[in-house]
Length: 210
Picture 1 (cartoon, rainbow, N blue to C red):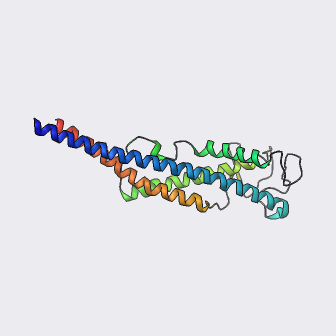
Picture 2 (picture 1 turned 45 degrees about the horizontal axis):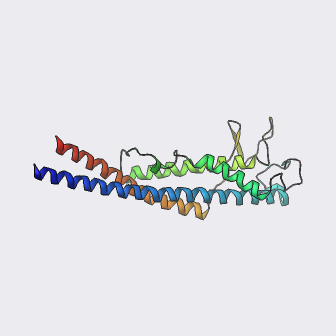
Picture 3 (picture 1 turned 90 degrees about the horizontal axis):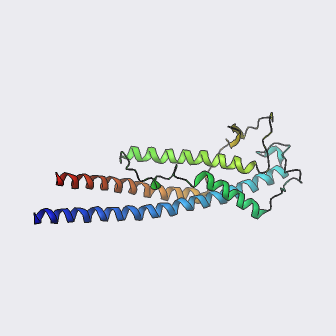
């Protein structure tokens, strides 16, 4: 009876240790998630300002149409100042990215597999979903300056999805976004393994009780 108690205590200590590592990993992943979101805000702000400059200086090379409307103001200017634009961009990015759909560490469920193929599949799925979301973010930010009108001519850089504009040209994340996402993926592997170890330890403890 005494031996069984010692074994049980050791198992609980092992489980507690793994859970502590898991929570530590989750905290680091949350930090990286917020870093990616902030990097996306910076990327979006730089992208929209660059495209507006192109629209003004070389409209034939712009992703906007030649008749770009800046809310009836002079080209290159909108009713928003830079601070207001920054706040608008921040709200749009937060709405699209700061929720649990992409970020596995916010989900407490055990993963069904920890094989290399499964991990790579999950990484690629997250990357594709984030890329699609950033394309929609660029569309939402663009609509601050370029409102969708019924019957407007198509533009090769955009598609209309459910009444919203989505950017479809080549899109590369900034170096900051890529570095942050890569760090997140490294910790994602650790999270999967720790999740698996917790599940196995719980099964062992339950087996000892029967």
